Amino acid sequence: MARIVVFGGYGAVGREAVAVLARSHDVVVAGRNPPRSVPGATTLRVDLRDDAAVEHALDGAYAVLMCAEVGNVRVARACLDRGVHYLDVTASQPVLAALRSVEGDATALLSVGLAPGVTNLLARHCVELTGARDVEIGVLLGGGERHGAAAVAWTLDGLAALGPSWRMPFPAPYGTRTVHGFPFPDRHTLRDTLDVHVRTGLCLDSRLLTALLPAAARFARRLGPLARARLGSDGFAVTVTAGGVTCAFSGRRQSRATGVVAALLVDRLPGRPRGAWHVDQVVDPAPFLTEVAGHGFAFHPPTMRPDGTATSSSAA
Image (cartoon, rainbow, N blue to C red; front, top):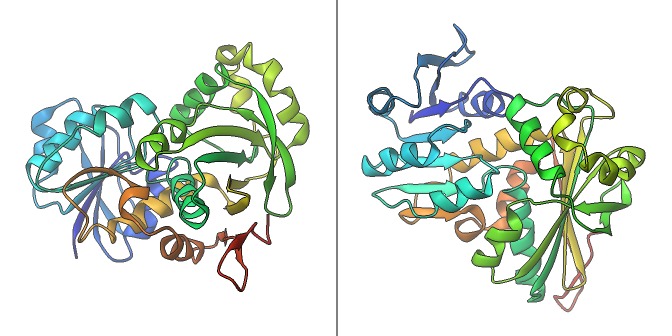
């Protein structure tokens, strides 16, 4: 079994990835304060700010999955210098941009969660079907899911930059919803990887809370305690429209979806090119999204006409 080191493998996303990886890999859960025991894995205390400790953790590793936001670029370089593959679930655009410059004797795979990640793959799928150059991405999150402190802080920062609104179709039971412009990193990364213009938007499962987002954006950085309240379900959906077609992905617990996607991508590393790549550059969308859907999610591809052209997803 390959040795997979998961930095931050005890957070909301990390523990979901570990649960999948532990079925077929030798998993090490590493970080500053790992629990004493993790089912199916061993634990290792590592301060990511300590280069020597990071180097020690990499001994014998096949791949590292980064589920923390500490020294990401430095850790990625250490991995690729030693021929260890690297995957990062970060949704921070500055971190993603910096990681793109990492080179070495292994693969660094970026945008490996739900958004970014599944959104990238849905966008590529629609663009390949239609040839469209304008892409819209909508992310619907359930207000009832418990998120980690880092995820809450990232969301509040994004709310402070909320932009104009528009309407997008989501899979049942959500239907067409208003989304508010939100700075998901896809709007930058897909411009480079697919040569398209992208706008990205956010809504919540509650229509009322979605309607209140523009007002809340003015006080985003003061909403920390309220943002941790669970108001709604744990459902999620992401939808992409391009060239008149829509495809989508949905399910429950977006943290689990991110962890499952990242874990399954570990087995897609063989044959990937060296250097740093976003997932949509090196992974075929439809087969992979179908595999992820087998873990309790739903992939809604566009419906194909007899002449081979696509129409919008029947589920959207």
